[in-house]
Image (tube, rainbow, N blue to C red):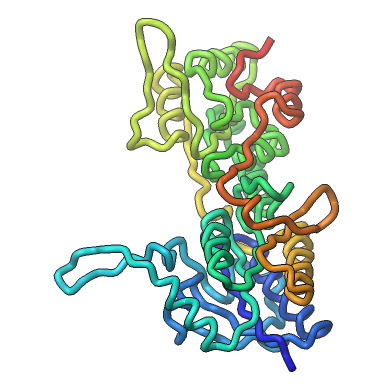
Length: 360
């Protein structure tokens, strides 16, 4: 008899999701005689089972280089805290997890493979604790999941950001401008730091190292004085400035993004021409890099193997160069941050890049 397995993708989209789906389906069919269905739009499909699609060799053909996810995804729809709007417009939350368990049984499923980030893994763990046989696959462009060295989608995001820095260099130099590029990363600075180093940025501002605005401005001013007629600053979306310890305190208005605020301060206080760019969802879209295709494929193969081995409550992960598996519980609630004194930051500072601390 065939093992009937469901696949769902939740949270923000990331390049490489389709590579994972493809690898799971092909491995499951080729090696383990599995049958697959796709649950559309995260766990919404377990709440409303009309959002179910059959997955086979034909449905995953040609999706390896495609960005996004053929199953759709959402940042909302937590079955344990599902938002319901009453006829009078009032919004309340309800626990619909029992309905999901019932639908899981009605669909005659023997396993669920949940592909997603921290939020999706939290939900997957709760379903596992309720008795659902679940396997997790980590996904985030932010690279902030603790239990895996790297998550797929990250390399593509860094590559897109690096290409943006390359393009900003030529226009910055031509117009003698300071360019401020704001990148994603949620609460961590991995994208900003790696793209900034790879792209040859002059300043990299990350949340792990709060910066002093006066120091940052002094650094840019010194570059101009030394004959560098432009500067490139890469700012993580959660980067924060330290209040200046003097008579004047410059605080970022919460209505401004970190990059917008920093760009305005540079232009206002140094009287130089500044351009600001928020890279935004360009980092999520488009075709995954070969690295993310490979990592997503390897994760997908291991996920199918875990189902065959009945090792539920586990999440695939990368440890060095090897794909292995860890308890889902080890991956949730623990973000992975850049080490301020680690090798990556030391590399940047050795190159003369300002990362929030005065350079000698």
